[in-house]
Length: 297
Image (tube, helix red, strand yellow):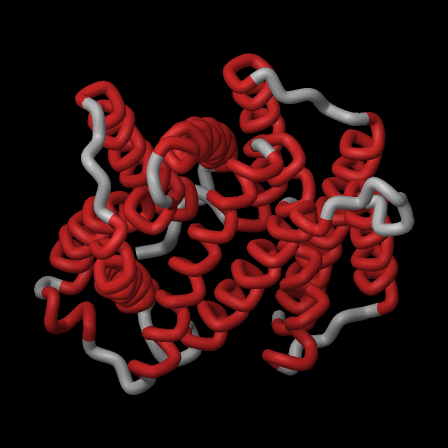
């Protein structure tokens, strides 16, 4: 059965997805400021793994079928990378806040584009290299490495972006031999196992109010991934992906209104350059995809 391409519905689902993930980040910022990051991520992963197993049974018929792969080391590495990225990004939330962390993290699509050539052998033309260069100028504007007041902690979300970019590239590579359901299963289960091994040693008693926030964190995580899956089921990724940048907007609103953060001028300018460069990169990928389809006819 051919995949539907209901772009308006896909855009609506992507907007909802970015909002839910922004709320999840706000909850993570609060909980990680009160409790150990590893414990918070561990509990979040328990619920995520349960969701992944349920999805695996639905799409593959059984957990064994979903887990079947000829590249278990690659799949396990993907899961470990994503778990590490989540931990690093939540640390960034507590150190820098939501606004600046997301402003830097939005460069990850540019990192994917830059690394897709050497890692996957994909062609990256001069226009996309120019966009990547503009995006990293934006990162430098945000980080202000030449300023005497530069805080090395500002590089934390850049590390998270690099980890997420590598995770994305490995996911593309894994997709050459495994179904999406298989990769999704390994992502959740591997991450849950790894985080349990390290997070259980940092268990802390939580207040009843924070357990409520933790429950909301788990619900938003599952809801966000479900919305994202539905989004890609009803519309082409190239049509809806640019709207993923709205997570920066929603996270900034939460950071300002809930946590009293501010948007510095250099952060706004740098984030604008990064988003513009990212949108151009998506547009070029879409144009090349159409050109390839025309040549194939």
